[in-house]
Amino acid sequence: MKKGKIVTFGELLLRFSKPDHLRLTQGDIFTSKYGGSEANVAVSLATLGDEVEYITRLPDTPVGHAGAMCLAQLGVNVSRVLYGGQRIGTYYFEPSAGMRNTKVIYDRDNSAYYDLKPGMIPWRDILKGASVFQASGITAAISQNAADATFEALDIADEMGITISYDINYRKNLWKYGADARETLSRMLERCDVMFGDVIEFEFITQRTAPLFDALDDSFELDPEPYRVWFDEIHRRFPRCRKWLMGMRNQISSSHHTLTALLWSDGRLLKTRVIDAPGIVDPMGVGDAFLAAFLHALQAFPDDEQLQLDYSLAAAVLKNSIPGDFNLSTDDEIMDVVMRRHNEHSLFKTTI
Image (cartoon, rainbow, N blue to C red):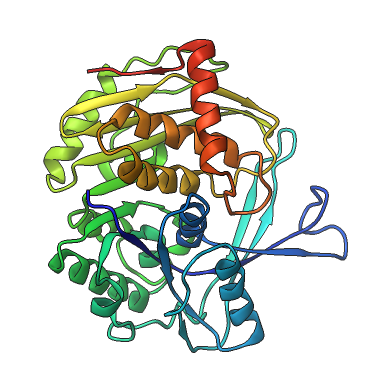
């Protein structure tokens, strides 16, 4: 893949939470942060030193401009963000604690992005000189107009010969406007070169159950063979996509997870060993950190697929330690985890 600008496209959200692990029904004070899958990817890439441009539609209000300023301060090019509409999309986040699961409540109807339509964004100008275009299934879930605008962007990127990266990002609670989620996401996947998802999202697309990942610590040895069969079948269904990246997580408790990852690349399956991650601070945006690190690694280490995968998992693990949606881990910090874990445990293994 050629080195160059990476363009991400999605809805910027305002996240509201109560402090100190309070439930949404407790207390009087909300804290707020900006986030959203594709914005998270953009911030991670900018932090790693990549040239990245983020495209969205925001309301022409102080709240909308503050969101763009937040990304700009973190190194993301937001010069061609579109302004219009009535409001910014929001979500309410209740963090997990003990045996209590995370709760997410979306409020995105009739947002500026919800009302986005094909023809509003000058994609040919924006994508000129780009090496990668990154989108996700969340954009197709918000509204029919947003889905149509995403298809327009994918088709133009394809026509211009740009590598298309895609995160399945299936969010069941967002698909409310009548479209068939599996059919819509599958049509998007047919246009993609690099694809990321977790086990649940892969199962949704394929309608097949994945092998169980139930690691309790980093001594767990993953058998790659059932996954190889699964990925080979997925590739036959979506032959254009040459790299399938899957993250796996076992949530032992709210603050203790185990993580690993697989990469299917042109018929070759690579894996990492398990990383045991106690002390989770904020798990939001971990998948976005994983994908951003992989896109960075594709350009930084073009001839070392194992390092690409190792680097991506290390970035995801580090994101768990950072409050908010954005992964602000640097390249040096990620490489330190890669090398430290490799030296201690021979953590990363390749399976041919």
